[in-house]
Length: 212
Image (cartoon, rainbow, N blue to C red; front, side):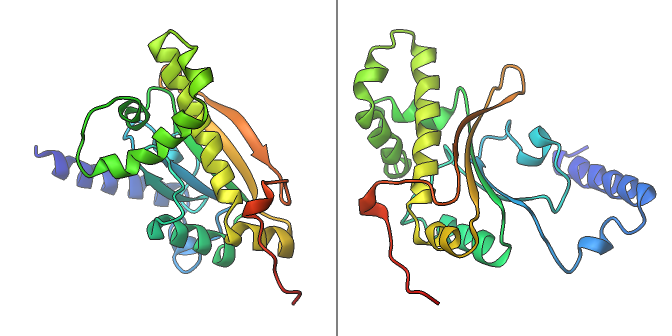
């Protein structure tokens, strides 16, 4: 059987199972979605958001890219962020990286990888900011995994630096920002950072909003 045909057959079995358990499983979500969470994760096929969290359809609004970056010039990411915060009114935003990330590992190297060089440059900037700490780690795997953690934290702060989130903090005291990391070796998620609504950020990134 061709691989894509197997996926289609598996989908049919999954849909039937859901309807057998609850007849309105799909119809109740057909016209509206109210997820509590925006998940910004890595595109790595081993870290599917719903699978590792046990979430059902409708619980997570998901955006994935190489190395779970929050780049302010990425219109795709910023559009997702705005929709999640202003339209879906999510309560939480999770940036989830994973140990052993190939994108982070590539950014630590000097290889010319073509157009993705421009994307990985953002991780190189994180390395540069923490060079002293990272170069003091002699074990290559440990150094990689520490940069994975630092990268997640940096992306959480990048979210906090957006006018989208700051406006929501001021208007409705949400969303909470979370930095998580996934361990491929044991399947467990770990929390690295939490920024509550209104958290202190560097003043240069703060925006003023007119009183409505």
